[in-house]
Length: 240
Length: 227
Ligand SMILES: Nc1ncnc2c1ncn2[C@@H]1O[C@H](COP(=O)(O)OP(=O)(O)OP(=O)(O)O)[C@@H](O)[C@H]1O
Ligand SMILES: [Mg+2]
Image (cartoon, rainbow over all chains, first blue to last red; front, side, top):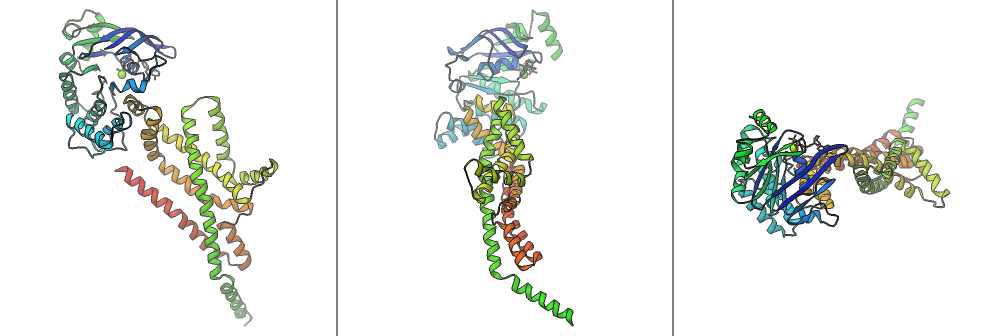
């Protein structure tokens, strides 16, 4: 379970998160929507300690993420993250991209790591691209590579930050299909997205962020289908 | 009549002036150039990468001071540095022979040049790529060695090659300290034989022979990394 209690976060004098409370249960899919700059990405960065927080606390399976004694490298093994930019490692083949962390972080043998990598790449439909370099692949393929790379650590949670926003429209579908597949497999996911129909389709709950606070949260049928907040209504009518 | 005798005398001094032995002498001097340049480039690169990393991570005063010192090494003409340090070492009770003094100065000169190249290479790696690696559980050092250095290396290689070739040529300046490397050896032979043209041509050919492998190897690496 991910528990976020009254978290605040600032960049210098700019307060980006202003007291966020949120619980995500095992197996749940939570979508986060909201205008640009509302703090969605920042929240994901805070959940796996890529950014420090200034107030409140975040616990993942009871572990205080920002605790002074917490081993963040160990914690991050349980939390996979995929970014808007696919961030392939350009000097490695697809297989090496995925096998790296199992080998050097989990201490698997080279053969084990390659086998894990091949399995995960097959899972996201890149089984025929093992020896290809990322620069020779489309954005959609590279984004699926990034998903496989995160999954190879067998995380308990996956954080997705607008993973389709930088893709050409015709490539969005293949990545959304992969996300859908993961949700059906029971992966716990927090999904920052601008794909409202998709969020409505896959999520158990949807949170609408506005200026660093959660304006509205609930099942998709309510938040997207029948929002109570004026701001949510306005945001939804703008993105449609 | 007297003119033709003169020409005959000149060509005689050409053949007796430059002997096969002198070619070996130049080859040995080229070996000295290779040694001093190889030491400077390899040790200087190690230090330079370390300094470049320090510059890329820290904003503390120490890094600013380091930057200033490196700027000095980069901007003061090498010949001045060589003479200054050669005369400075004995003052602090550390009399060094020309080879040692020249190598030390060249190492720092190379390190200063490589530092800014290395810093550029490190900073060419997108921050999100580094964060993506950390999000997989890689430690700071694992990320640095498996991701940032290899990627940064690729983008810094052309500039590093320029530095390495430059240092090879600049090593000629160590001759002012009296160390007999290729340029100094050529000067000695020229004084004796009075045949500057052929000797400088041979010295130039040696410099080319030393540079060529560096240029070729890095060119080939670059092409391989591009695929
Ligand atoms: N590293 C940083 N340093 C300073 N300010 C930052 C940094 N990262 C984000 N911000 C600022 O924090 C605010 C929230 O950014 P964040 O990226 O979390 O928004 P977002 O909701 O993800 O927006 P988008 O939909 O554009 O991705 C923005 O005003 C942004 O400019
Ligand atoms: Mg964002």
